[in-house]
Image (tube, rainbow, N blue to C red; front, side):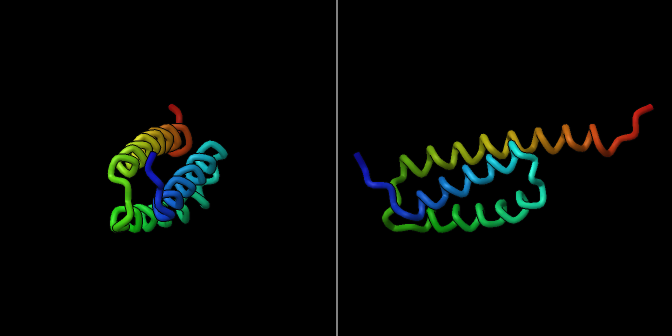
Length: 85
């Protein structure tokens, strides 16, 4: 069992925080956390102590989350920004 470095744990926490905000519809907070998430990704990737396998798994989870976020944005745009005819 490998030890997960702190940078990777921070990335996991930030991803989970973003997911919770998405589920709660906290769009203003999502903008802030999303910027933080990119910083966490950068730190985890550059960490000399990173676990490549675990990091790839976590980055896969981030990609899944962004697919979900993209879908939510499309739904939001259709429901709230296009007048019904």
